[in-house]
Image 1: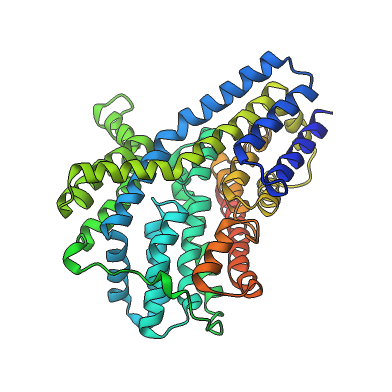
Image 2: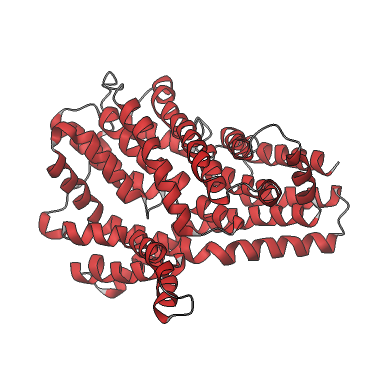
Length: 438
């Protein structure tokens, strides 16, 4: 009975979001109340679970999401992304421009949200397309594959970060495994599949040609790369070096401290305020206004995460954890495959990779202990599933179509297939890695 109610609740959630277009946060709250009442939880207990779920969820990720938004805004407004892109093109050459954009997408996508990275880099792709008379989809899709992979697989992006905190796993290890899975997925979905798209010659939207900054207006290549990659560098240094020092030593504690996701992002934002703001002759009040705008742009994410946390806590307090764990013990599917399948189904139905990832995490958490599944790989498996087949219910689908001016059919043949390859190749990478470390 509890499992049936959970499944019905999930279906109702999907219907609320995708069919009735009810706001995601309200949908989560409505389903949380409904499931709790059907499972005969006292109303006071339901309220307590919702409050606890929202608090616990936001308490662990709100600072990182806010800091990530701030860093993204500084990178976008300073010209650092344009500098990285043009530098990569000068190194690789216009003959390999799609590889330059693919690498740029990966570098910029590590700390930036997908929508920020897209709106930052797509105009540069369109500008290059017109200037060098190159097919925009052909040179642009590898870059979008990189952005999608980093968004779906790697913290500190919202969904992977949420899943990681849900499973209580280490960020450094998740990043290390994630990079091992991400690079082949980008090569398959971006480089290999992208190479087949030369026939799409439709001209992209001229309205999105980038306004190029003068060389003197942009930060240097060194500063741009360093600032964008600083959070990853700090986390990696902590993960690789800290274990070599005694547990209670000051050096190890300091390394662990700076390697914490919140601290590393905080340090990176402070550095970016100087390198991409003050050093670029911007006034402090202008920088502060910019940071304030960045928070407004991600505020809705906080509500979505809070709603997902509320539903998770109601299900947990109702005893769904034990029921799922018992069911999983008899399941024929490998837990990593099951997590991918559940995330993929929710993604296709709802259209949001974020909702897909964080909803699936709540269902899969109980079975980690009972099946001894490698939790870092479960983060990646769910992340890969959450990228499955983007179509008409996904904002990214329409964003791509609007910028690149493709027909509905061609958008499905290019964008949707690319996202599907991102998902499937991600699962393949996870299973291959599991055979080694699992």
